[in-house]
Amino acid sequence: MAEDIKKPFDLSNYLEQSKNKIELALDESLGPEEPEQLRTAMRYSLLAGGKRLRPILCLAACELAGGNPDKAVPTAVALEMIHTMSLIHDDLPAMDNDDIRRGRPTNHKVYGDAIAILAGDALLTRAFEMVSIRTQGVPADRLIKVVGELSLVAGAPGLVGGQVVDLESEGKKVDLETLEFIHLHKTGALLSACVICGALIGGAEEKLINALKTYAKGIGLAFQIIDDILDVTASSEVLGKTAGKDLLADKTTYPKLLGLDESRRRAKELVRISKEALEPWEESSEPLRALADYITNRDR
Amino acid sequence: MAEDIKKPFDLSNYLEQSKNKIELALDESLGPEEPEQLRTAMRYSLLAGGKRLRPILCLAACELAGGNPDKAVPTAVALEMIHTMSLIHDDLPAMDNDDIRRGRPTNHKVYGDAIAILAGDALLTRAFEMVSIRTQGVPADRLIKVVGELSLVAGAPGLVGGQVVDLESEGKKVDLETLEFIHLHKTGALLSACVICGALIGGAEEKLINALKTYAKGIGLAFQIIDDILDVTASSEVLGKTAGKDLLADKTTYPKLLGLDESRRRAKELVRISKEALEPWEESSEPLRALADYITNRDR
Image (tube, rainbow over all chains, first blue to last red; front, top):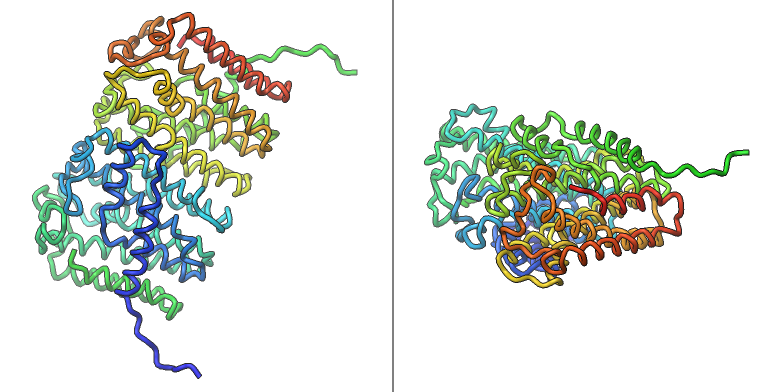
């Protein structure tokens, strides 16, 4: 008889294995069909490291839905491409004018504004290619739903809409409602799309999709609150981007609106709600629940 | 008995009816979900007029394939969105730095660089939304193929790749091969995608798809040759954009490489080959064949 003693879920091992799979797929995702300069610029930002939380969430959700996570790898790559393109465009001088990202010069500092804009455009379209052309063995009706999710999250109802309101808010007094609009659009929507797309590839039922929406909404806001806290408490060296920039730019942040302690309390409560939503799925939801804790305990 | 006398195909009536259908669909394609400023900027360029040749080609190809062209309307709109976003980004100061487009100030001249970049991004993602979410009554396996075509044409293997090589070529002596690479990627690929996507929505067989590829390749290059000729021979007032700009920027053009007469002859020959490819489909291919003539006879 099999032993009844349950081995505790090993998150760091899970993260390492998933990350390796993602890094390999990202490395192989850009072919020789691009002009050399463009491909180099796309790779520079896409392979700049990072925790790869978004694609990992996608694979974990696919598995939770009973699917083979390997089939979700192109979609996971697509999500990281969309994330990367939004960083490249947001960093441009015409937008947030950031010089440093992940401890390195931003894309336009290395390749110039024109190539940075085009590298972003190409990553965005390549994301849709990953789902529509480079995915194997997934029914077309699931894929077209994934395309729909990506089109919403990357565009005006998601990242672009959030960035517009973010730009409009700079230097202004912003209330909590506007702050949450920005974060839901710039951060939460993409994290949500990660789990929804993974679950769609895995063939999830409506009940699981809804639970994942609750889960993602919670971790999305928690993620942003922690980001704001780290911007105040951590150094630029640890963060790999300019720390304290939000304060300098007079941006509204959670610590500024609620104080550090209340911000931390709120993040913890959001994570609790997120994990609770997935409890009915017991052990198969362990990776996603552990990821929720990981997000609030991170130091960068 | 029905009369045997065949009524000649009325292209101008066909163009007017198709254009009206497209204009209406374009007008309805942007909802209230975008932040006001973004939506205004998107509409400014999307509804700036123009012949709407690309969406009309899409509807005509759908009908030629035996499909109901109304089902291809969201895809036709998507193609015009992709065309528009590439114009907005190409016009940016970091790229071609154009002030006038279709007789009006370019998008960034009115809304600033940041909003122009974001309006382009949002139009690109909205294009994929049109196909994946806003298309009714078309099987998912056809739609996912359309998404694949759009992802290739809008990205590095199409518009973006062409623009990169175009930027790299500025001020340099460019040979015919590089010139055709640029045009195939910046103009031809999208015209081709228009007829292929329309045909896919209509359920075209392989044989028709291949004929349409030949057709599109010919009209694509012919279209660009005529553009180059008009840049030399027409005034800015007629063109609605800065005429002679290619000469000023020392860009390689067909008239410069081949002379005006040889350029005209080549465009005519390409159109002949295009029309020939569709002859087996007789009357049902009349709109597309008439459109091929129209493209070489235009004066703007």
